[in-house]
Image (cartoon, rainbow over all chains, first blue to last red; front, top):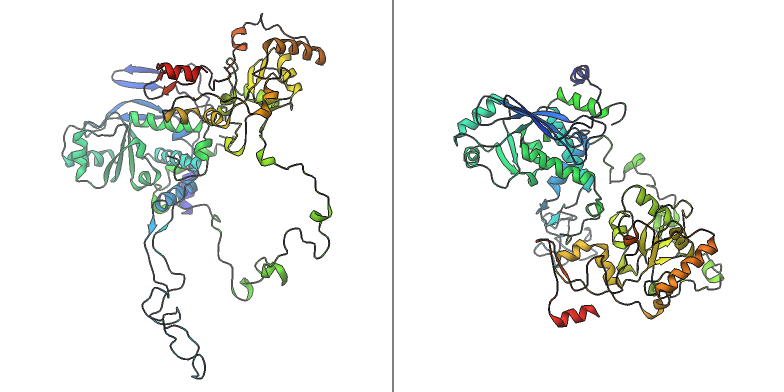
Length: 281
Length: 294
């Protein structure tokens, strides 16, 4: 572990981040089919450079780079806080967990109404019921009672930071890829397996699109592959991102995620930060 | 992003570390506090309860009890400052300093008339109509640094505040809103979404009528003639020259007032705001028109 860390430290080469000059505006430069998109964000990055990623294709097994794409550093290059990712994972496990473990108390175990022997004169310890927790076959004291919820809400900005941390970590570890669209040429699962194999993705892959429906070829091909899953952009969460090795975003999904997170990072979130109430929806 | 580039360094480090997954996560060391108290010879001492007595047995004396002395709360004569406080109208304060801050930080648009809805929307002022809060009390803190020309409508203001705003060529009105209207002003979107028509604003209760009809307080029910006279009087009292409203380029905006029955600027009572289709539905039935016009 120590040598791993030393290796990691050695490999760090940090280029000084330059402040993005203001003349860059939204423009797509096309030079022999390679599109380079410079974006004009509503909240432009102030102190850090935008991250650049390749836009890849999925219509052939061999990788073709279709263009360059900019990602906002506040979303895709945030501080990767492992502890916040962990707290998000714990929260996602817990908030929907209802524990159904159940034990009977001394009142619920059958029998035990009669005093087993008189209080005095027998030379035996005093007892009032054969179902007391001290007895074999008696009730359980302080045992689990069913229907216990573990629901709680993680503070709003920890949830936001969990998403940005995970996205940033995925991007930094080359586990996040942006594709132009999800149109596959065939609905064979073999095609998808070959694609994932040749791109060095996965094996488990989470595909996120902007729309509620995915192209038919993709849904049919991934239907028999339990490790390839498709998700709309509003379903994106920390647990699923970590559960899968690789995260594939379509270009529009990447933009949508960026737009939503930047919106919440730059707006008044008093309402979202308020204490959770059951009927607030 | 500090000068030490911690984000850049940690992201660069992640490149050569194993993939982050559910299996290799952990929280910061020391995040978890043990909820169990120690037992045994050295683990279990006094557990913060001290040695013997009420600390351990939790049989504390009642609040204010002085072990037999005539206690303080009985020794002093009663003074009824707060008698009936739960019936009184409350006006949570907002200082001129804060208003100036809102304007400087571009959280308040002063090219339009400012009312309690826009103050709440700035995100730095909050009030609760269900707790007898009846709106903004504009206080005179930061009165010397106030330099904005605004048309502001508040619910309570002192003479210094009125003078500070009028010295800069601004206009101030004090206006009464009943609690129901205040709920609408606090969260207009929530009200528009439930599809009801905008109600009329109620007239002030008897004990507030005097305040809101007085030109001294720039009440919204006062005579405009008297108000303009009082503006002059106040300028003479505080020794500043009253800027002429008529020559102002934003004269139109400065003269904008709400109708005494109106809750939102630009929206009349009786209208229904349809957010989904982005349109306004106005009543056509004559009886309704007559009702909302009164």
